[in-house]
Image 1 (cartoon, rainbow, N blue to C red):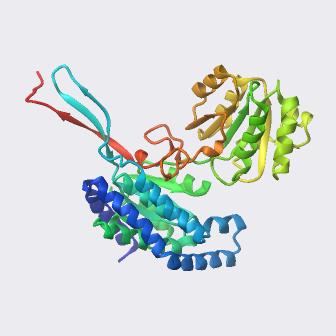
Image 2: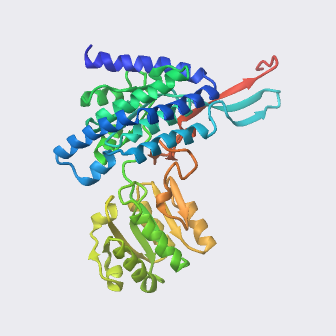
Length: 418
């Protein structure tokens, strides 16, 4: 078969499997998720052996340590992946859930209920755990999944796919509800972006900026994604100093490579002279380099920030710092430079917090909490397939519920329209 024939066959089988998964009851989908988790555990040696080969090849190709860390699995990490599937199995099945119900004056009973989207295409890089997370969340929502990982993790993802499909088979669901694209040919990605002759309903990219940009530019089907995570933490004049220091350090330094890491600190001029040195000292002690505007540099030593710094997602131990003249300027800065991902305000002033949450139009807005909580697991979703910053359908962490759409069920008793 040619590559095009292979890909379209995958699409046809996914569409057929999606219909069967949609018709299955919640108990069967739950059983499949639990079986998938157990098969990951049973297959641990095989998965880790394949992963060791992927890691060895990546190192031989001279990739950086951060990339290798994203790629590498060990027994503890693999158990965490399996445990994540157990968590997804434990969350409520969203399929068929009533979102709203009402009765019209003519007696028509109308219900809006959740229903699966259909076939989810997931294109990802390096992190092999994405295969398990995405396949499981899509299944929880009654969908089929086509997974295309990067060449760097091909062996690992293939072995994970074998375990997931074994779990589906054990529960009596079609194995084709989760399929791994069996090629690293980039042309396969292009075919998925075109929808495989209508087989794919939505695409979710997980990876670097270049991958997401390509998907958003070329996709002919809807996309759940974010291009960048330029997240802000704003220290308001009414901030509690201890909270301001602790939250800022966590928001930047807990994990610098995640999309919810704070990249710019905004601080009110009224409290900057007393508070910014404490925050800066704590950040430097944690290994963070600072780049500030003129006002920030006049208060405590740091490198000069250029215009480009406000537009940069560092994904590294670097933080840009700006002193602002109150909440209006902070909100204006976020509107100009932000990417609609995640923003936080630190304040004890309830009115200021209310203003910030109303006027900041990002997918996630926090009050007195770290931006690193931008995560589906932390939201109680059991995991996430990604963070979406668009304004239609899914927004913020995309969990099982966000992988459903809805339909209307209208029940009558002989009504006709005059």
